[in-house]
Length: 339
Image 1 (cartoon, rainbow, N blue to C red):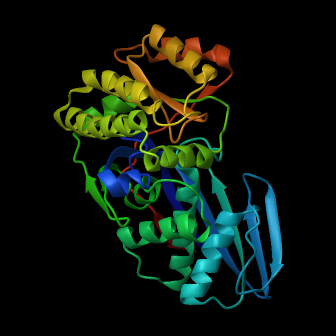
Image 2: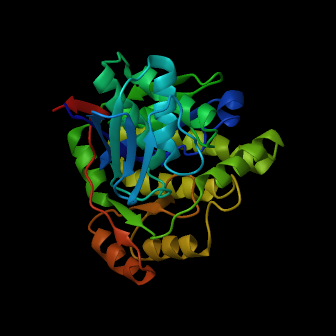
Image 3: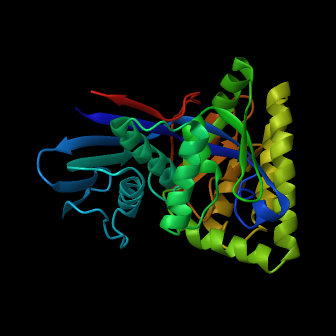
């Protein structure tokens, strides 16, 4: 038997950063995101001998261990090890296996790659062991492994986007409570959003953990400008929800631009001179607004290009050495199957 799984990456459209503790615990957070046709993939193959082989094919990394109940987390393929260690602890695994993973976007690029990969790996083990995870169970389990077992800084939205799929308005409360509200957006509105929303990879990556840790410190130290920016971003998520549901797509660029101005106030390092230049160039060429995807500091940016301006914006950004990525919105979340 061979077991496989895949889960979609996501574009954050509004509210980014308000899903991060302690802000979400103290004030409540809100985010609007949508899953796209870029994925994290995992394959699990039982082996006849007592070996554990972990392979990240996109990173050309492979680790081989003698069978053990716990693998050492030391910075090398820790997401794969962390999921194995938790599954082993909670459900027990016997025998060797080869776990192979691949992600359609670079790590640290702002599309939720790490959390989506964790969901995908849990999914492939759940497929093999026939574990009865629901969407909320799966997402919370992934969050627990990342934030508590591996102690990686980050928010809560990515795990839920990967398990649920589609366009979702998410609310975050204290004690890690999350409510996912799937949005029923008319197909023509989604097609138009997909047509006008340009996904641009800046060809730079970043350590999102450091930015998120700074953001959390700003909340703990009651830095008013940072907290007020998060309040405004939470409001932005509500504005984006209303615009999409009512088909007021002409407002989306302005809503994104409003969020871009606020997000830079949350923590140092979210934006930089390169990203500012890219943003201004895109706006000068016809984009009505945009945002930095994920925690910021590098990775992907998105731009709303109304009318037929997308091609002019694409051409204007060529000088920065990045590249645009084609995508479609997808409705499905985590999918697993057996061969």
